Image 1 (cartoon, rainbow, N blue to C red):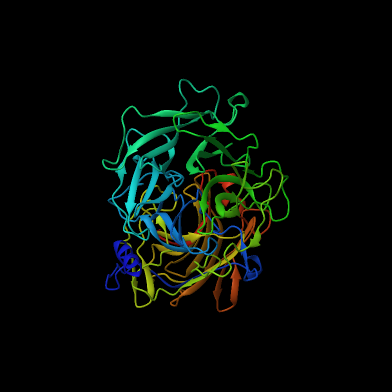
Image 2: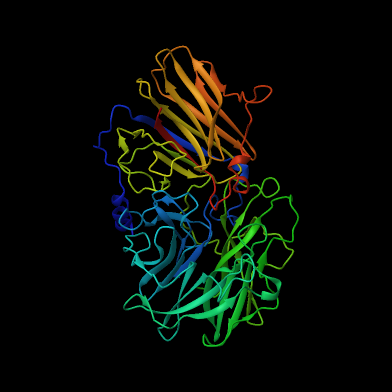
Length: 555
């Protein structure tokens, strides 16, 4: 696998000998930390979420003793992150299924368009990943023999409309695609959707003409006007076909429901105990709250036990959360040949005994991570916006160099930005940044929720001094909210720091006087505490969480 990972990295590697223009901003190091009390648990215990930060819509498959999981990524690039685990709780990021420009283009898209909910399956020696590129091509399939990559070019499925496609392989060798799409006839109410099924030819990689069939119209009980039936997955167990779907929308009313049938030619019947997972009946706020649970996928371990991965959120106030929708894990039970995840009214536990405590697996450092740029290629953690191009970045002599472009973070074109996922409501991000002495360039740390909602903490030089500033973009309008000028030009690198504490943020820089706080000057009196709730999905809208990273631009 190691050789394969290196091959994938080479597709978007940054060569040591690449020289950028003299206006490049240099970054000596970057550090992300969460207070240890937030994520330290006993060795035989795991912490939910198992993929903290913006990793939604999980889909999981197994090959032998190896588990693989993929998430939505929307317009971030590279896209469709692929994780590996041997124990279901410790996950290592091993690559991306979409890692080159020939596979997709997200130019001009909002950050919450692009790659929606994928399905990952292993069958007869091949990994299949089926997905939707919203506003950028529609539904497609990728294949690989190693999930670390490389993945194939997309096979587009023009006949399969809607979103959230699933691929299912039956015992007789037949394959099927289920997906969300418009209901038959005119929608009866807002949010009325349906689940459809196609038979799929694996040899030609096309759906079989005339095989389209309606599986679910509306949801569990159409008389109750259920909304947004989506995220279908089909399984087979003990002669039953099971169809599980998300229902209620991806917000606080989110839930997971299940249906079954003895034959795909017969109707699916809803479980009387639906939903099998939801948190919508629990009050907010509450301690260790997990909300908006749903969009589940099931997996059976080698020992016969069943597990479910699903998305949820961790609101810090009401239903505000900056970390996006995250991946959680719970054990499953079977009652009278029906799958169940969690009894209604029961809160999702944030810590549980490890399912396989004696099995070790590599773990991506979600909560504490530092990059000193000692390798000739970018670490897999870094993602950009919309474009697969990285010719504006290089690693030279242990420094990351970022060439500024004219495009600010509000642009939907190519932007000089590299970010990592915010993994907890409390965090500290620091970076050592060196901005060229020539005026007209800024560089620093950005907290990015979308092109319309973000913060930028930058430093730039003028003819008479060095300027530190904080910009806040809300509803697409940018305002400078803090400003600090040194009456001389700094010639050395400066350390910038961004601290988050649920609904507030702090911006500081380190100089001759130690740490200096940036004070917001837009209110009645200067204050270092700035409003971080603008970075919550509740306020900003869309489907992503906040990323924290490096930005540079021409002024």
